[in-house]
Length: 285
Ligand code: NAD
Image (tube, rainbow, N blue to C red; front, side):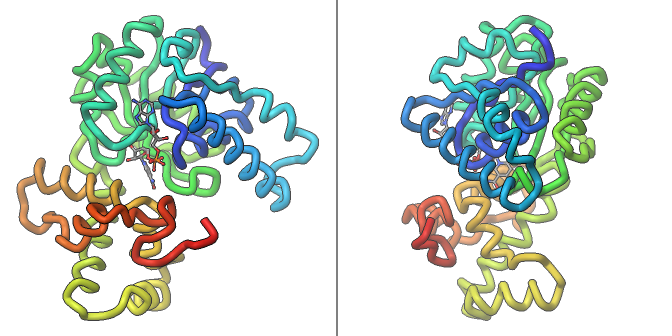
C-alpha cells in the first residue's frame, strides 16, 4: 500500500479525466465501474483524450504507451485494496456513494485515504458512513479535468490535517492547484456557480432571452470563457440539479430552489453533452 497507486471509482467523464491526469503524473491507476463495457469505453476515452493532449503539445508522444500502461481497469471494488488513495467519482447520489465508501472501508487498509469528487454531498456524512472519517476528504476536480487547474479540497468535520496535506500533495503532483475549504453545502465553487446557472435557466423559462442570447451576454459581457447554459450542458444537467437540491435542502433558503425547467430537462433525459442534447444540441458527441 503506497501513494504511488491511485484508485478511481466511476469511469464517467470525471473519473476518466482523473485517471488520465493521475497516469500522466506517474501514478499507477486502477479505474473501476459497475460494468465491463463502461470501463472499456472509459479506457478508449482516456486514449483519445491523451492523443488530443499529445497533438496539443501538453504530453510527449514518446510517453503515450507508458502512460496508458499505467491504467488498469476492473469491475471489482475489492481490487482497490493496494491503493494509497481511492478517489470516488460515481454518480451524484448519497446512497450510492455511501455504499461505495462502506465497501472500500472493508477492502482497503486502514491507512488508505478515501476521497470523493462529489459536487454537493457532505464529506462529513460520507466519512460517517465508514470507520475512518479522519481519512475521508473531498477532492473536487473541475471539468474538463485535463484542463482546469483547481482541485477544491474539502475538509469534513473529522478529516485529519494529515489527510488534507496528503491529498494536496497528490493534487500538486498531478499539476493542479489545491485550495482548501470547509464542508459546507456546495463548498465554495458550486455555492457560487450553480445559483448563476439556475438563474440563467429561469431567464430562459421566463422568456427573458433565448439560451443563445443568455450565453452570449455572459460570455461577451462578463468575459466568461463560456456561457452558463453551455457550461451546464458540459457539467451535466443531472449534476446541476443535484447541487441545487442539496443547496436548497441544506440551507433552506428559497433563493436556491431549482428552476422547474431544469427539473423538466432532467426528467426528459436532456442531460447536456453526455446525452447529445441539453440547452444546446451536440449531434457529434
Ligand atoms: P457520469 O454520469 O459521466 O459518470 C458517473 C459514472 O458512475 C458512470 O460511469 C456510472 O456507471 C458510474 N457508477 C454508477 N454507480 C456506480 C457504482 N455503484 N460504482 C461505481 N461506479 C458507478 O458523471 P460525472 O459527470 O463523471 O460525475 C461523477 C461525479 O463527479 C459526481 O459526483 C459529480 O457530482 C462529480 N463532478 C462532476 C463534474 C462535472 O462537471 N460533470 C464536476 C465536478 C465533480
